[in-house]
Length: 361
Length: 218
Image (tube, rainbow over all chains, first blue to last red; front, top):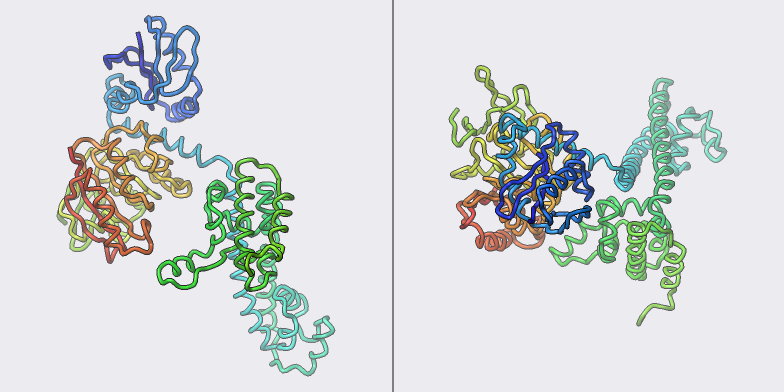
């Protein structure tokens, strides 16, 4: 005799060849408990309710059990039949069974139970640690801060420039200027020798103490935002090196994380072809090209990579292709093996980048 | 206020559903109270089925107690209105692929009891094949396989002569092609399996979208 078994939200059920239910084992109507059992069962393990059902079937004289997962059980032959009768029966009449067997008292209670069970299952999925998602959020913050800091710094320059234009002019670095303003502020207090000599002959207008205090307070906040940016990017560098060693080595940790963010995760990045990786971040230009036949883009976020930055303008397209191909390998190495093979990738890339290798130039 | 379809009310140019959960005012900016009953405004700018009704969809297929398969549930805004319409004896199986959206969908589901969140890819119905047969399938996913996704899911889950609704996103299928061409291609795929009852474009509520109401052929 052959029985068909399937496990659903309400329990474990066995049907015979005539689609008659022969044995069953209901779960107790506790969503968290059911979610735990389903997780285990769907993973391919045997849960206690399934085991006791098999025992019942053996006692009733069944010699073969068809199941939608691969199982071994002493004393009975288990067959793997993913589309078996039990599964369809349970899918079609699970609702009726739940009511007939008094698992729940009415439709709405059953709906609530199914809903609760799946909320638990979904939560369990979401809860899993995903390092790539964390890195994607962090790089988003760094890029946003870079953009915002530029604007904020421009405002700071214009504001302080009213008072001491020479300092604004000579200290080119935003962060340094922010530090100088917040720490020293007053023209006479500036320590930088190049700047200090302009203190008396400045073209700036006078600022009252109050005026100066306001711009200093602002500069202080700009300065602290630069510190935030540096802390987050230091974190990314460290975390990326251990989570995606190959991508970090080939692209640099920050660009590596931007690639992750554009692809939507490490798994997705690892499945992308070289050509797509080359253009990640250049979607706007790519679609403009496809729509209007404008010039196609040569690179996306990898544009910031030193090898492209240092390359001759005419060489940049070729360099971008080589870099993208190594990134493709790196992403796959990181996702599928986790092994660090960056030395080989980097030396391969160096060899390919040699100008002697250019074809027909 | 007039009930224009089961569980959907219209007042002038505004749509409402009768709130299943008292005090639940998510995803709506206006709540209209009449005695103890609360009606939540269903904004066509934020929900494609509502937009389709505003654009002249003659018959909306959802009924009280219906079982619904909703593909591409996102954070559950539209789901919450479907949930009002079908009531506590109906159920919505809400499939969503993005974990970020599913986080919000879970919150919506917790509050309502008739929404079943499923974190899965609608292109692979095998992952949720335990779902019972449904009366209505609604698809609103951003994929270039919109037609095939609908066909596969309806094949597996939709009851005979059941209704299907799809919001075809021309821009998700092909950014370059003319939307009309994209609609034609998708509809000709769908026509093999469904009788197309009505189609409406969703502008100005939604750009480059076509909403189609269909019924499964025997």
